[in-house]
Image 1 (cartoon, helix red, strand yellow):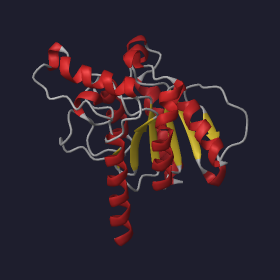
Image 2: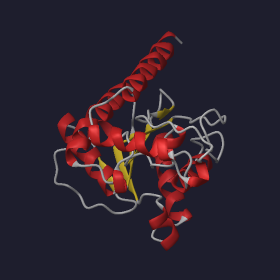
Image 3: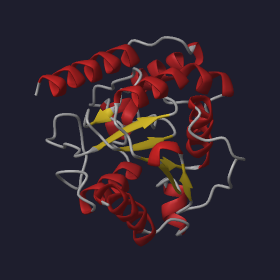
Image 4: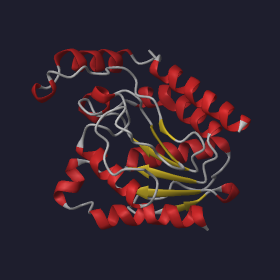
Length: 232
Protein backbone atom coordinates (compact mmCIF):
# COMPACT_ATOMS: atom_id res chain seq x y z
CA UNK A 1 0.00 0.00 0.00
CA UNK A 2 2.83 2.39 0.79
CA UNK A 3 4.39 1.78 -2.61
CA UNK A 4 1.04 2.41 -4.32
CA UNK A 5 0.71 5.68 -2.42
CA UNK A 6 4.21 6.78 -3.47
CA UNK A 7 3.49 5.85 -7.09
CA UNK A 8 0.23 7.84 -7.11
CA UNK A 9 2.06 10.80 -5.59
CA UNK A 10 4.78 10.67 -8.27
CA UNK A 11 2.11 10.34 -10.95
CA UNK A 12 0.31 13.43 -9.65
CA UNK A 13 3.56 15.43 -9.49
CA UNK A 14 4.45 14.46 -13.06
CA UNK A 15 1.06 15.61 -14.28
CA UNK A 16 1.42 18.91 -12.42
CA UNK A 17 4.72 19.53 -14.19
CA UNK A 18 3.20 18.67 -17.59
CA UNK A 19 0.36 21.15 -17.03
CA UNK A 20 2.85 23.88 -16.06
CA UNK A 21 5.04 23.38 -19.17
CA UNK A 22 5.64 26.50 -21.31
CA UNK A 23 8.37 25.22 -23.66
CA UNK A 24 6.55 25.65 -26.97
CA UNK A 25 5.49 29.27 -27.47
CA UNK A 26 3.56 28.54 -30.69
CA UNK A 27 1.48 25.81 -29.07
CA UNK A 28 0.82 27.73 -25.89
CA UNK A 29 -0.37 30.75 -27.87
CA UNK A 30 -2.59 28.59 -30.07
CA UNK A 31 -4.20 26.75 -27.14
CA UNK A 32 -4.90 29.99 -25.30
CA UNK A 33 -6.41 31.55 -28.43
CA UNK A 34 -8.68 28.55 -28.99
CA UNK A 35 -9.74 28.64 -25.34
CA UNK A 36 -10.59 32.32 -25.63
CA UNK A 37 -12.36 32.29 -29.00
CA UNK A 38 -14.06 28.88 -28.53
CA UNK A 39 -16.26 27.01 -30.97
CA UNK A 40 -19.87 28.14 -31.18
CA UNK A 41 -21.15 24.77 -29.95
CA UNK A 42 -19.05 25.15 -26.80
CA UNK A 43 -19.33 28.90 -26.22
CA UNK A 44 -20.74 28.32 -22.70
CA UNK A 45 -17.88 25.99 -21.73
CA UNK A 46 -14.81 26.95 -19.75
CA UNK A 47 -11.90 25.71 -21.87
CA UNK A 48 -8.87 24.12 -20.22
CA UNK A 49 -6.40 25.75 -22.63
CA UNK A 50 -3.26 24.35 -20.97
CA UNK A 51 -1.04 21.31 -21.59
CA UNK A 52 -3.15 18.19 -21.05
CA UNK A 53 -1.78 15.78 -18.42
CA UNK A 54 -1.59 12.01 -18.61
CA UNK A 55 -4.74 10.16 -17.64
CA UNK A 56 -5.23 6.77 -16.05
CA UNK A 57 -3.95 4.20 -13.60
CA UNK A 58 -0.59 4.96 -11.96
CA UNK A 59 0.05 1.17 -11.98
CA UNK A 60 -0.82 0.74 -15.66
CA UNK A 61 0.77 -2.04 -17.70
CA UNK A 62 -0.92 -0.82 -20.89
CA UNK A 63 0.17 2.61 -22.14
CA UNK A 64 -1.86 4.10 -25.00
CA UNK A 65 0.13 6.76 -26.87
CA UNK A 66 -1.78 9.24 -28.99
CA UNK A 67 -0.65 12.21 -31.04
CA UNK A 68 -1.88 15.39 -29.32
CA UNK A 69 -4.97 16.91 -27.71
CA UNK A 70 -7.73 18.07 -30.04
CA UNK A 71 -8.30 21.82 -30.04
CA UNK A 72 -11.95 21.54 -29.01
CA UNK A 73 -11.62 18.13 -27.35
CA UNK A 74 -8.97 17.64 -24.69
CA UNK A 75 -7.86 21.27 -24.97
CA UNK A 76 -11.41 22.10 -23.89
CA UNK A 77 -12.01 19.40 -21.27
CA UNK A 78 -8.49 18.99 -19.88
CA UNK A 79 -8.52 15.19 -20.20
CA UNK A 80 -6.92 13.03 -22.86
CA UNK A 81 -9.33 11.94 -25.63
CA UNK A 82 -12.31 13.56 -23.93
CA UNK A 83 -14.85 15.72 -25.68
CA UNK A 84 -14.47 14.49 -29.27
CA UNK A 85 -15.39 11.54 -31.48
CA UNK A 86 -11.93 9.97 -31.23
CA UNK A 87 -12.47 9.65 -27.50
CA UNK A 88 -15.88 8.06 -28.06
CA UNK A 89 -14.17 5.32 -30.03
CA UNK A 90 -11.26 4.93 -27.64
CA UNK A 91 -13.18 4.64 -24.38
CA UNK A 92 -15.81 2.33 -25.85
CA UNK A 93 -13.02 -0.03 -26.92
CA UNK A 94 -11.20 0.28 -23.59
CA UNK A 95 -14.38 -0.53 -21.68
CA UNK A 96 -15.12 -3.53 -23.88
CA UNK A 97 -11.63 -4.91 -23.20
CA UNK A 98 -11.91 -4.30 -19.45
CA UNK A 99 -9.56 -1.32 -19.26
CA UNK A 100 -12.21 1.27 -18.32
CA UNK A 101 -15.15 1.25 -15.91
CA UNK A 102 -17.51 2.93 -18.41
CA UNK A 103 -17.69 3.27 -22.20
CA UNK A 104 -17.98 7.04 -22.44
CA UNK A 105 -15.88 10.07 -21.56
CA UNK A 106 -17.70 13.38 -21.52
CA UNK A 107 -15.79 15.61 -19.12
CA UNK A 108 -13.38 15.52 -16.22
CA UNK A 109 -15.18 14.33 -13.11
CA UNK A 110 -17.71 12.15 -14.97
CA UNK A 111 -16.72 9.04 -13.00
CA UNK A 112 -14.48 7.50 -15.67
CA UNK A 113 -11.60 5.42 -14.35
CA UNK A 114 -9.04 3.41 -16.25
CA UNK A 115 -7.96 -0.02 -15.04
CA UNK A 116 -4.36 -1.16 -15.65
CA UNK A 117 -4.21 1.42 -18.44
CA UNK A 118 -2.93 4.96 -18.92
CA UNK A 119 -3.11 7.40 -21.83
CA UNK A 120 -0.46 9.87 -22.89
CA UNK A 121 0.47 11.77 -26.04
CA UNK A 122 3.65 12.53 -27.94
CA UNK A 123 2.50 16.15 -27.62
CA UNK A 124 0.52 17.51 -24.68
CA UNK A 125 -0.69 20.74 -26.31
CA UNK A 126 -3.12 21.01 -29.21
CA UNK A 127 -1.19 21.96 -32.39
CA UNK A 128 -2.56 23.95 -35.34
CA UNK A 129 -3.86 21.60 -38.06
CA UNK A 130 -3.06 18.77 -35.64
CA UNK A 131 0.60 18.91 -36.76
CA UNK A 132 3.26 19.50 -34.11
CA UNK A 133 6.71 20.34 -35.43
CA UNK A 134 9.77 18.13 -34.86
CA UNK A 135 11.06 20.64 -32.33
CA UNK A 136 7.77 20.58 -30.44
CA UNK A 137 7.75 16.79 -30.36
CA UNK A 138 11.34 16.86 -29.08
CA UNK A 139 10.32 19.31 -26.35
CA UNK A 140 7.61 16.90 -25.22
CA UNK A 141 9.79 13.77 -25.36
CA UNK A 142 10.80 14.23 -21.72
CA UNK A 143 7.22 13.66 -20.58
CA UNK A 144 7.00 10.33 -22.40
CA UNK A 145 10.33 9.32 -20.88
CA UNK A 146 9.21 10.16 -17.36
CA UNK A 147 5.86 8.47 -17.90
CA UNK A 148 7.57 5.24 -18.95
CA UNK A 149 9.99 5.55 -16.01
CA UNK A 150 7.07 5.64 -13.62
CA UNK A 151 4.71 3.01 -15.04
CA UNK A 152 5.31 -0.75 -15.13
CA UNK A 153 4.37 -0.86 -18.82
CA UNK A 154 4.33 -4.23 -20.57
CA UNK A 155 2.31 -3.28 -23.66
CA UNK A 156 2.56 -0.01 -25.59
CA UNK A 157 -0.19 0.87 -28.06
CA UNK A 158 0.61 3.61 -30.57
CA UNK A 159 -2.35 5.33 -32.19
CA UNK A 160 -1.22 6.52 -35.61
CA UNK A 161 2.06 6.67 -37.48
CA UNK A 162 3.55 9.68 -35.67
CA UNK A 163 3.01 8.05 -32.29
CA UNK A 164 4.40 4.75 -33.66
CA UNK A 165 7.63 6.41 -34.77
CA UNK A 166 7.94 8.45 -31.57
CA UNK A 167 7.59 5.36 -29.38
CA UNK A 168 10.16 3.44 -31.44
CA UNK A 169 12.60 6.35 -31.19
CA UNK A 170 12.04 6.30 -27.44
CA UNK A 171 12.63 2.54 -27.28
CA UNK A 172 15.90 2.95 -29.16
CA UNK A 173 17.12 5.60 -26.71
CA UNK A 174 16.38 3.21 -23.86
CA UNK A 175 18.11 0.33 -25.60
CA UNK A 176 14.88 -1.67 -25.72
CA UNK A 177 14.96 -1.92 -29.52
CA UNK A 178 17.88 -1.74 -31.96
CA UNK A 179 16.39 -2.92 -35.23
CA UNK A 180 15.27 -1.01 -38.31
CA UNK A 181 12.18 1.16 -38.30
CA UNK A 182 9.33 -1.26 -39.03
CA UNK A 183 6.51 -0.21 -41.30
CA UNK A 184 3.43 1.22 -39.68
CA UNK A 185 0.32 -0.85 -40.22
CA UNK A 186 -2.79 -1.47 -38.20
CA UNK A 187 -2.27 -4.47 -35.95
CA UNK A 188 1.52 -4.45 -36.36
CA UNK A 189 3.36 -5.97 -33.40
CA UNK A 190 6.95 -5.29 -32.38
CA UNK A 191 8.87 -7.27 -29.79
CA UNK A 192 10.92 -5.15 -27.40
CA UNK A 193 13.47 -6.20 -24.81
CA UNK A 194 12.33 -7.38 -21.42
CA UNK A 195 9.25 -9.07 -22.82
CA UNK A 196 7.61 -5.75 -23.71
CA UNK A 197 5.41 -5.40 -26.79
CA UNK A 198 4.54 -2.44 -29.01
CA UNK A 199 1.24 -2.61 -30.90
CA UNK A 200 0.07 -0.30 -33.69
CA UNK A 201 -3.40 0.96 -34.49
CA UNK A 202 -4.80 3.46 -36.91
CA UNK A 203 -5.79 6.58 -35.03
CA UNK A 204 -9.55 6.78 -34.31
CA UNK A 205 -9.78 10.15 -36.06
CA UNK A 206 -12.93 11.11 -37.92
CA UNK A 207 -10.96 10.90 -41.16
CA UNK A 208 -10.26 7.22 -40.47
CA UNK A 209 -13.54 6.19 -38.86
CA UNK A 210 -15.89 8.01 -41.25
CA UNK A 211 -14.16 6.53 -44.30
CA UNK A 212 -13.98 2.98 -42.94
CA UNK A 213 -10.19 2.92 -42.82
CA UNK A 214 -10.68 2.02 -39.17
CA UNK A 215 -13.74 -0.02 -38.14
CA UNK A 216 -14.95 -0.93 -34.65
CA UNK A 217 -13.98 -4.62 -35.04
CA UNK A 218 -10.48 -3.59 -36.15
CA UNK A 219 -10.08 -1.28 -33.18
CA UNK A 220 -11.52 -3.85 -30.75
CA UNK A 221 -9.08 -6.48 -32.01
CA UNK A 222 -6.08 -4.36 -31.00
CA UNK A 223 -7.31 -3.97 -27.43
CA UNK A 224 -8.27 -7.64 -27.28
CA UNK A 225 -4.67 -8.45 -28.25
CA UNK A 226 -3.37 -6.16 -25.51
CA UNK A 227 -5.64 -7.91 -23.02
CA UNK A 228 -4.42 -11.35 -24.05
CA UNK A 229 -0.78 -10.27 -23.80
CA UNK A 230 -1.23 -8.85 -20.31
CA UNK A 231 -3.26 -11.81 -19.08
CA UNK A 232 -0.83 -14.39 -20.45
